[in-house]
Length: 312
Image (cartoon, rainbow, N blue to C red; front, top):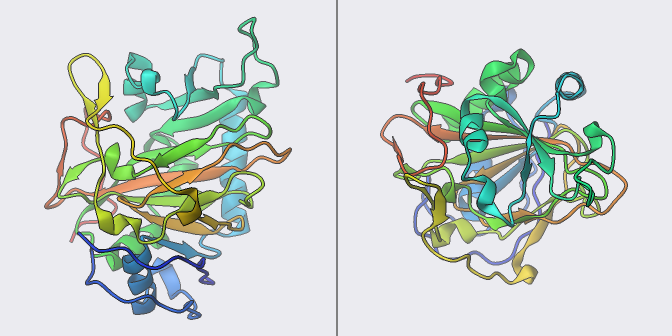
């Protein structure tokens, strides 16, 4: 597997890290060891910057299998879904969204519908994402999620009993693929102490044109800015959203099959896809279930505990 990183700005002050603080590193050139294990240079880069790009993490055959399987799921979709937008979290207040924690649920793009309430384009070009239990309920996505590469990666990060808490297939549809505003994953998937790490697998090339990820290198060292709280009625944020200087973000352009590892406190975003090309990706969020307590205030509450990737 090849290893590739993106240039970054000077580091910010560290608050909490999985590893000891390190200085800014030159671009690592070492190839990734077999089975998803991370070497010391890669671990130091992740600790310093809050993200890591692993080239060719999945083979073309694995990527094709997941894309083909999603095409089958979309083809069988009956149209009963909800609209998803990160700009308006009103949908995180209804039963459909809450139940998606342990289901395979479909969410439409905000701009998929016309004034008459009908889809403006084909069904397969109207869906924002599918979530949040693909990793458990579908054998193709479960094979990837519980594969040796993913497990080895979290072993390298010193997770004791890691578990995928949610999975999402994201379409970033051409022309209408919605913006994902700057955020931290720990805002939505909080454990005490924080342990969420995101995996973002490109299933198509992701560029600045079609809505690749952007991140503020080192921003994970400034801690968690706010949390989404679920109460007896709905959800709300405990603090307003901070404002960010767009000049601090760097693009994480990747090829199909590349994986982006994302620290739970890293500030990241993606812009609207106004291009004629889609940007499919699979996103997993993993927490440690040993020594870390899942918050009862998170929007995502399960009836059955998640299956761990491994146990030490």
